[in-house]
Length: 332
Image 1 (tube, one colour):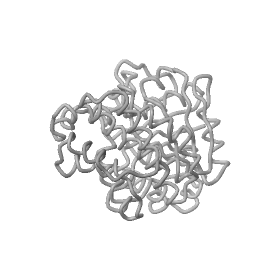
Image 2: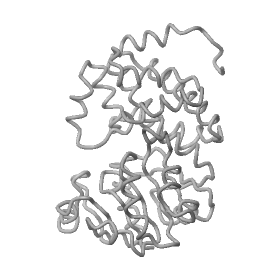
Image 3: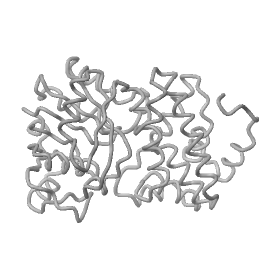
């Protein structure tokens, strides 16, 4: 297949690698001409240093050129940039293209998941067949070819199967589902709870606390998902508990690292200033908190993380307030 990968961050580079190793013709789009030249001449992305790109990958900073005539367009730019990038690319897309979202976030302001953004910026026929990737996959391990599993959701099963065929390999197992809402919410909300788990670890609270946060965080994710029409079983799968456990416990998680530093007492602005890549959970926490309020869904852990990130509350005080809440049945 002729594939465009929009974004040469770590995950975009890892997906481009997987696609190229499967024999796909991959053209990566990056904003900077210098970054494009670095990929073409140096066979390396600045965001995944040390990983040599396989043959079959080219790069350009021309967005229209990147998507023109491509059968598959994989959008891996951060979620807050998707509307702008795909809005500019929409008129150049092939009518039969399958657009795949690998962004994990909720748009601030509109509180849209990426499928709703797609519906607003892409031609109706293209947005209707769009697919959405999620699951427990750190970019460095995916690029190295370590065994991994991921899920692709689409309301058109043929689209999900096409993406499945393009990505499946001896090292990457790809599953399909029709539950776009559940997959998107799972992928976005796990970043919020990864920050929370990092905060607890930074405070030195131990494994009991981490396990409690992961479990109750999953409950929050499922409550909101079901309210918005998701299949509750999705949260027991790769886009739910799988991705949640990975990002809450893995040291490669940027969101967990943000939480760790917050728990140690560093200011959020200082933490973010020292990061070269985006920690989606910081923005997503604000959007998730607003979405829970709009939908009338109780999400106390999300509210506590929001208070620490965006309201200036001390992390230790937020944990104390969570534990002092009125006792309740576990499944309420």
